[in-house]
Amino acid sequence: MPEQPESTVDPLDRMNALPELRLRDWRATKDTLHLYAQILGKIRMATTPPRNHWWNVPLYVDVRGLTTRRLHHRGTTFEITLDFVDHSTIVRTADGRSASFELAGLSVADFDARIHALLADLGVDVEIREQPFGVPMTTPFPLDVEHASWDRGAIERFGRILDWSDSVFEEFSGWFSGKTSPVHLFWHSLDLAVTRFSGRAAAPIDADAVTQEAYSQEVISFGFWAGDDNVGDAAYYSYTAPEPAGLREQPLSVGAWIEFGPGSLAVLPYEAVRSARHPRTTLLAFCQSAYEAGARLAGWDTTGFESKWCPTPNQLGELHGSAADEFGRARANP
Image 1 (tube, helix red, strand yellow):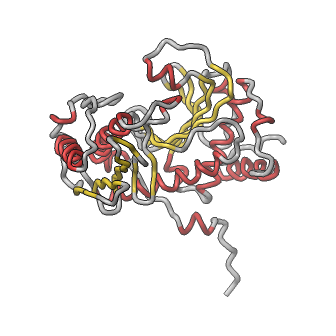
Image 2: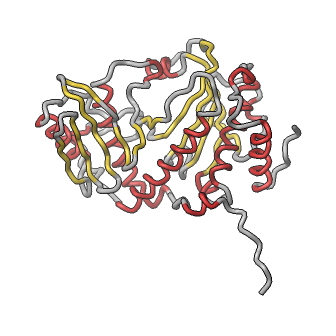
């Protein structure tokens, strides 16, 4: 028998094969999860001191799903977890108490009532604005009996994708020595995001207070959307704000620029990453090329922000080249 060539697929990519995530297959569950996350995010916002760029309000990926991380109220330290493994909501306190309830078939109204009752039993309940924020759904949480879908398989797939994406974004964050946000999940749009800063203030914008604070400095953001009516199926994205002229004409190693609202968005469909021979390097190349495009045109001090050892210039060149080769694009000149 002739010798078979070795696979070119990274063993880690093979072991951690990414699942499909089509919006049409879990839309009802996604909307329900999104509203659950908004309730927990508002509880987090009510129990944490303000931080720049609203960094006190997001949720975080943990080993079992999404978490508020540590919160403090009335002398008690506690944490709330949306558990994608046992499909439950769990509250744990630093003094050893815990309580939980199952999520399957639970309407948003029931979820809202149960989480507040559970927090009250533990002596840490807080008032929140019981209204969805920044989403098409407008029914107040205590009245929303429409959204009650919970597809366990879809939730588990989403959890795996969040965990994997979070790990790649963490790696990418280590390549930048300037100010960088945590990798966190913003519950108003249900997107996992990480943001780099130039260190310069941005011109004031005519927008609501939330948006004004978020874009008070020059930024380049990267993230993962679970999918919605604007982007369709799940996708990775990047944008530069304020957007420099000519951004949409800049080459990307993988992905494409699209018109999005008043500006431009670099988009890489999740399915393209999932089906790539090397998903990790594909996503890293997308993020790096979007960063280089925005930072170059916006006049960032890219040399000063470079890590001296992770990755090396040769590794960056190979990253771009391998992604370009896989997607049939010309390699950029060094």
